[in-house]
Amino acid sequence: MEFPEIDSAVFFGTITMVTWGIWVVLGNAASESIDPRTAAAISYLVAGPLALGFILVSDASLVITAKGGLLAGTAGLFTGIGLISMYIGLSGGSTTTVSTLGAMYFVIAAIIGMVVLGDEVTIARLAGIAFAAIGVVLITY
Image (tube, rainbow, N blue to C red; front, side):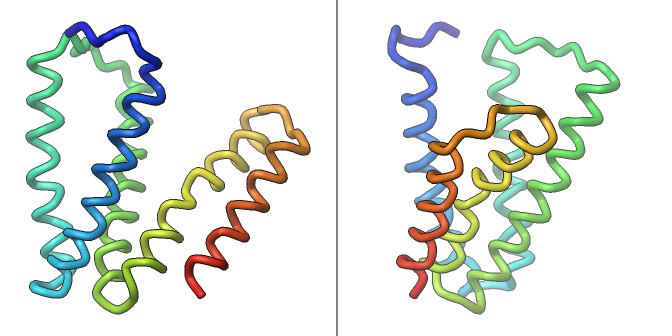
């Protein structure tokens, strides 16, 4: 599957931002209508076949190594915990607070990248994390 000659990180990042924003709003509505754990399960029951279907229609490799499979499965475990946590949070809290805190996952990834994976620690990165934290405080209060 060929994609147009644009910055794919920006293109797909934008799609992610918009669709996850809509997902949180719809997840909030679902959590107010049915048990949030059930809403989370339905959400993944729809997402799973969509991801598998995309693999089948794209040129994705179907080769799975032990390491890659274990890492992907573990990532799925954390994704599921986060999904269930978000739906339960939405059922008892505001969409603004839950979605803003949940969207801060990139701070955790950045910290892990710098502390564990050896990414360079720079003043700009530390300032970005600090500004993100300030943004959360401003949005949630």
